[in-house]
Image (cartoon, rainbow, N blue to C red; front, side, top):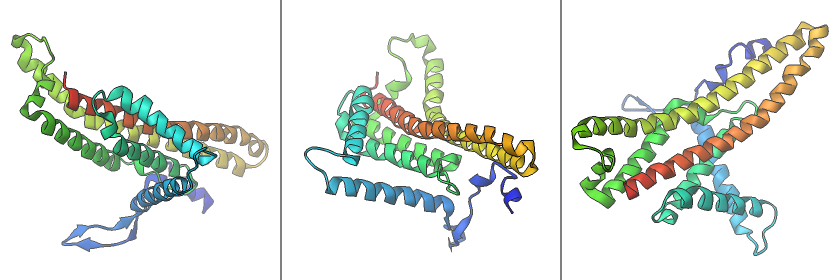
Length: 253
């Protein structure tokens, strides 16, 4: 049973149904991916509710951590990258940062599931944010938002080519945003699973190899620390790029 558990590093990314449900021949089943996404949401809700309900004028323990993150996201991410009315979009960006962070960290729990390791999830998330950013831009500037695709001072003879290049680059923002998060989370977890399988194989072999399995085991613990850092970094990069794209839509050139 334990030997079969380490056969494939991709086994941990398997999506399976917990509760099957279909409506008009469409599958709306509740899966392990849905379960861990909801878990991240409720953990986030109860965590901040517990901190805010017991907030003190002189912060202690977890309140200091939350306020540090609050200041970091507001001053280092939102204010620096959104020049106009950045505070207006701060609440949604704050929630996005922590939701991605919690989803990433839940995947570090043994037998957990990393929601952000699936391109469908990250692409859907990035696409919904991208659509929202464009709605804000169109509402603010109308058709003048199309000037975003023509760099200021560009010669008119090159306009068709530049507009095409800028438009392709603009649309690929969704792909790059989703691929970056998906690839980083998936690759790190695959590496951990491969090393864990390697360590278990050495331990099962007996003799000198059963002692030598401590080497990959130490490496695993080091990579776990690295993965926790990457979980934070990817939430930071995702939120930072959203701020950059939002600033482009608000300020244009």
